[in-house]
Length: 273
Image (tube, rainbow, N blue to C red; front, side, top):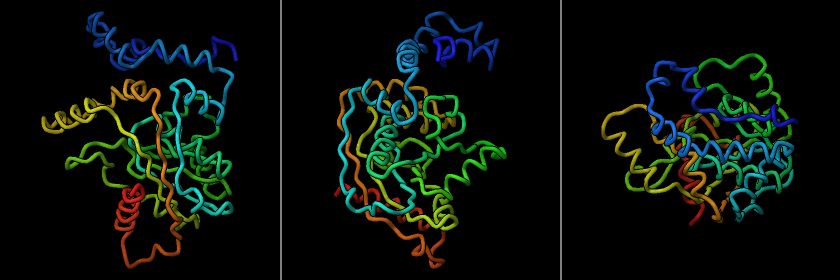
């Protein structure tokens, strides 16, 4: 891949394409601040540097860039042979995902990660990312890719919350878990492995989220700072706790899918203890 073919972030062009008037009105110092918070130059330099690293090797490149170590606990709970959905909390935004992918791949082999389809623009992750459209209907091609992956022997990684954890009632935790992973486990006859990833973002991120919520602002403005939060993770050791698989046959009609999702969420938050 030549340098000219490498994805490069240009936030000024992105804003101009979405709102040309706003792009013209933004003062230079504001644009400079946006670029700095998004770490545009650093990320673009990394994308060029790692242009020839792909799929699981690209994941390792990111872990190397941020000098991230991780430790796995309870992996012995998981049979080597089996088709699982690994359901985890989502505490950070990016680094947690890289550790999650690398750990499951190292111990269980080929895996796919269910993500928002906009992330498919990051070609280096191909074919790890499994696209899902959170804002509309799934196109036919992506729906087929999704179905084939779930029917295969590959492991599936899943964030049931669909959003990065926030501070709720004084504790850093996911919002309510969506029930879709329960439906998928039953449909594709996959047992569920609960996973707890032990890391967090900065206090600034959680305070901003709380202030935004208090003011009644619906836009998740704290998400704008996730790239900056990623860089704050440098040098950390992250712990991943794997629980005992939960058989899809145990997800009976005595509880609703939403109740099962909440029960497994509770199991996840007890894994560390």
